[in-house]
Amino acid sequence: MITYQDLFEYLFSQVKEEGCDCTLRHTKRFAQMHGLSFYRLSAILITRSGNCDCKVLFNAVNRLDNEAEIIEHTGPNAQRYAKEKGYYCHCLVDGMPASPAEAYAASNIGKDTEWGVTCDEDAPCAELDTVRAAKERDPDEWEDFLYDREGEPCGDFGM
Image (tube, rainbow, N blue to C red):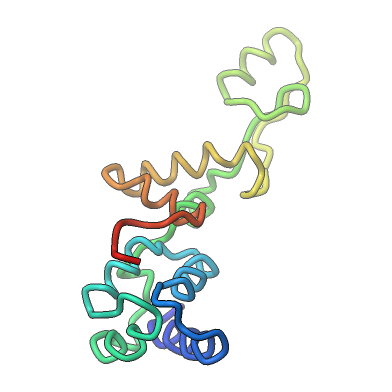
């Protein structure tokens, strides 16, 4: 269970060691390390005057329940959601990733076909699973969950 207190302790050590650059970069790293949606976490912090890492420590720390589990408020990021749903599983045709439909057709013509092969979440074939998870997780804002995973800027929060 990852709580806001865990976030605050992490931010305190990171800001003390590296300083604050007026962004939520340490918060973003924390979210990525724990499979949390940075997009949603940053929105929660910003509405509590935590629009950079040091302001999270000065302002948001007093406006959040330190013992609350973060994922209950943010939900998982797309990569964690895909892993929880067991999406990182594929078919192989002649050693190459394929959709189940492609594998079925290939097996009908005698090609070497493997079913239910687990792939690593960082493998190129996993991108489709991550997109599927993001769309399923939040159909209206699915691209924001992909940005979490890819490390791109999330939303326009003046960072």
